[in-house]
Length: 395
Ligand SMILES: [Zn+2]
Ligand SMILES: [Zn+2]
Image 1 (cartoon, rainbow, N blue to C red):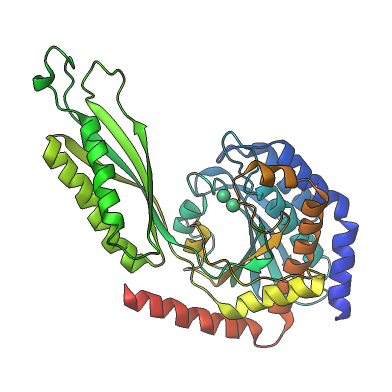
Image 2 (image 1 turned 45 degrees about the horizontal axis):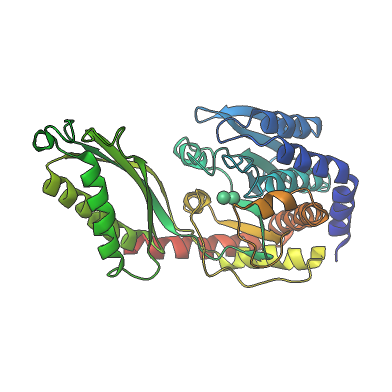
């Protein structure tokens, strides 16, 4: 263990009250996506007090921010991304309080231990991961374009890195029919709800004939108003996911055709709206290794292989711009599902507090390695370029 890393650990330990304070405050004041004003106020105030230059409101998102610490001119630019949105009706069931606190802890501890090594640390506050995916407009606005690497943390039921995430499209199906009295003149009506129901059925049949990594799950967001009126408007929302974008695009076309067929069969009018799209993660093993090695050195005893079953994240889109990796740190027992009350309750537990301190140390030291170990960043970038171009040529 180098002296510099020991100093980083000591900085994290001396920041313990600040880091735990952020974690518990955000946990106890859950805010939904794009409304995380209290969290952002606390995070930016803390970073500004530790000599970071804060810019709040990016890409038209009032709860997005960027906080920059430049240590001398030049050197690598390390992006540390955090989320802080909660889940509707549940609170912090995805543990975003843990990542906001540990990213800020890592950034400050790193800034205090760079000596005369040139480097820039940029903390990005990325809102609404669970809903509108704040990273997507931030990518469009180019806010990640000049960083060399993007690191994230997420709580978990095991300590690991994300080896993959699924490509995903969120889609609204809007069926318009014709209202009529359901008993007196049903023959004059066109049921928009029938269009929605037939779409669900057609997708059930499709499920048998797609690859096993495909996930298709939907809800009826509007099924009509009254049972005695033929519904003239009905809507459904679907998530469609697959391991990679090229295959997902072929599945999407078949899902759209299922809805188009339903519209044709019922005589209703269909509008398909793409709400958002996330890309599957571009995986960089070298970067994952850096995170895992530093997690181990920081004192995390049990490290697991990447999860085989994953969801989707807007961080996947970031990994097309720059090499990116996410460290998952255990704070709930193995097998405990996320988006659950168990995750909410563990957010301020002893295990939760320990996870944010260890994550702060592991992330700060990973960034320190990327800045100081000769050729490491170059190796990461070379692997990233290869992985990205292999994927792009398959599109
Ligand atoms: Zn989540
Ligand atoms: Zn999450």
